[in-house]
Length: 490
Image 1 (tube, rainbow, N blue to C red):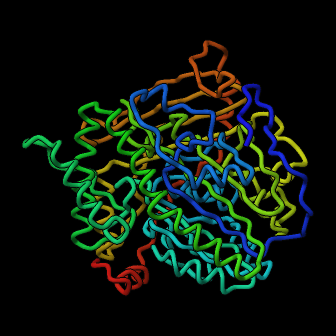
Image 2 (image 1 turned 180 degrees about the vertical axis):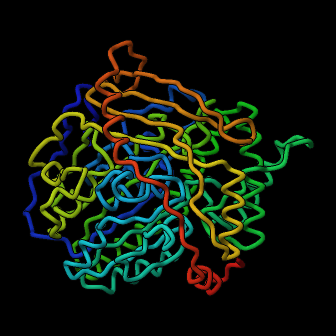
Image 3 (image 1 turned 90 degrees about the horizontal axis):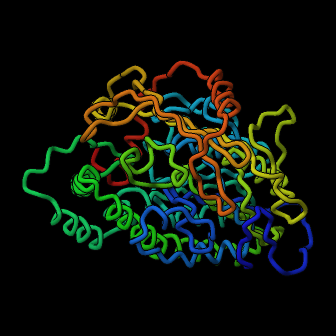
């Protein structure tokens, strides 16, 4: 792949255009939770080295190879910096305030998704997730899914290979905390060793852990390891050791790619080759990760490094190229449906736009596309108590959320509004009111700008008019029964 340019022009791969065929038999979405775009070595537009200059870059060969084979969009802006709202936007092509899931853990996905359209077209629909609490039935993510799997990578591949045609998604939580490991099943002794290594950094008087939230169901030892890992991370964060934390994250990226994603993609590709079916592979992330005085990881952040995620599209109808112009995660659904030849409504249902012609090498991205992002979060203690009630099967109303951040991108500028932040050791959320205007240089790095923010503020105001009241999450026993059948103690 040719190196990137600095003027925003498309960078095309060499090679003749391929014969166009009407559709792919299999559409396989691969979601790498918490992967920021600029940790991929093939991405020439990096932010993190300027902020963490002493950090060592991870080896990302499996993603570098995919980027060279396909259409690589390194400047894709997520609609939200946390898993549920970010994935809702990706699957529906609609911004969170429209599709029903805009808060951290409230509401249900009410809009049609890529799985809805695939099912209408006669395809089988499969989803494999590492975070069943967040990407499960409770928030509406299993609707129009024929087969829903939890952490079962091989079973997912078997199901796709056995079907005539599919729209399927494999979600991986291995880059998310505990960075690189996910749980004991995938992390094994390396995970235990990493927890022991991190605990060696703790002082004897470390305060009790407030953040006891979990995204997947775990047995007793797994839960204990996760909370001990979090205890160490919290201590490093509130001690201001941001560089050290970011290196732990980078090391986790490399470990996950090598130990889990690379073998998964090798098995998937081999099975597809054996079946003789055509596969469209779409690799993306929901949000990135970062550490500073305003950002603890991602879920409370409007940092560009958190909102900017990768998108890689690979298939035999795809023209290899690097596209540095800004796109949005809401563009993924319409693009994928058009590439696969799956009909979608003609009623303006998508907030995003199809970039299928760009992916095929027939057009260029029409400049930097405008984007909006928002972050809602909840008091950590309230969420912990909410989860405990939920696991006991008790009813509860909506979880109280606070809008803590907004971001709007337009042309070469963006505005950030920070409206709330966590107190020390997550002891509640305090209101703030900080607005920052930035302008991007030709390397896509943001710098402070003193221009007029009116047009960007109007974008946020217009988007906010779609806001609706919070909706509670129903308690269901079915998912607990399914997880117990997999061996979880809950």
